[in-house]
Length: 453
Image 1 (cartoon, rainbow, N blue to C red):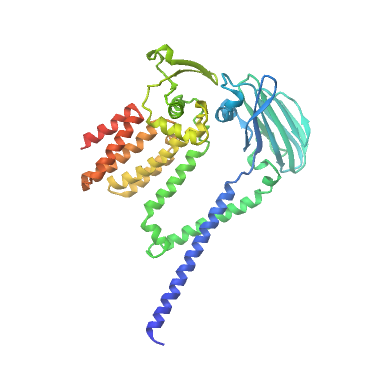
Image 2 (image 1 turned 90 degrees about the vertical axis):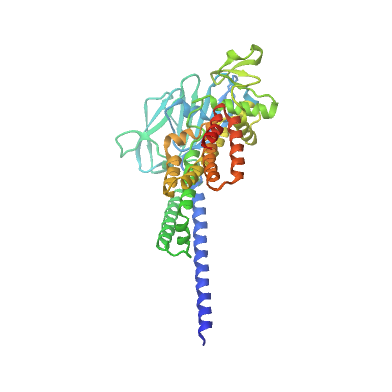
């Protein structure tokens, strides 16, 4: 046998080996993605229905969801569904939050047999049933004693608030414990199907962790081999790191994004939504104004919404409409049929998306302007995870649009001064135009460009 056929056979065998290796890597990535989706599916908690009580004592459901625990120490946590999912066609514009009821149903798991003590901390009335048995008292603050066997038990709990500042917590003390604690999520389940997911979820989580660690270990060992997947990742390590940073930033910003910061933390958020929605649907911008004295009385329309007073100006001229148009368009696409349908649940997706773009531009600008690309990657990681930045990135404010425009301008002007691309000046001018229409302070964007040039 000649040498040439042996070399050809060796290369063919090597190619088959690489193909099998890549196939195994692809299968591992697909399995990891499926396991991640399974782990993100609903697990512990109780099924909750939040309802408004009308003058005729009729309950109108507002939202149904799974609450992981029954721990609502502040009013914002219980009022949140009504602010975000209010039904304007059915209930009209609420001057104040009317009486409401929350009903939680599902399963409670006891780890041991014996007498359990429950403590309900509630501002208002409640009804508590375990295995169909009503437990008293109806007022909060007194411990409730009941025997339970080890295993799952049905639970049905209703809370009614009239005019109190809403507050509700369900705590328990097991036979082997000496103090009360909030019932943990793994001791609650919305139904039998969710209750049976606990062991499989643990297995899936362990398998996912083992798969990720195996993939990382393999890539680390082959990082010097440029033809391998590990070498590919090593050569593009900053881009790979940025992808992970963007995913982390998205997860941090989306967690309870419409709850924290709380409703009416700043009323400016609603100003942008109302201005953009009315300009798109009615042709004339309307929004609440902080300067009613500067508008003719015929153009002011005072109203009260959830206990807060507003002066609605029509037409509205406090701020340029550029950013508001984006917010109003996104809210409309997500189902806003009236001005007051521009809720935080819909509007805050705009600043979150822009903040992800800002993270990307922080890294890109750092890679371009700083001597070590690691500085840009670390700056992006800091911007993505700093708690004050994460919370501020959720607010519906025009600054969320100005930040990426300034960063993009820095990158484009640097490239223009270095390479002389005329297209970069055109892009810079376009960004400056958008900034001026986003907010009055957006004039700083073209001013900085002029000073730079």
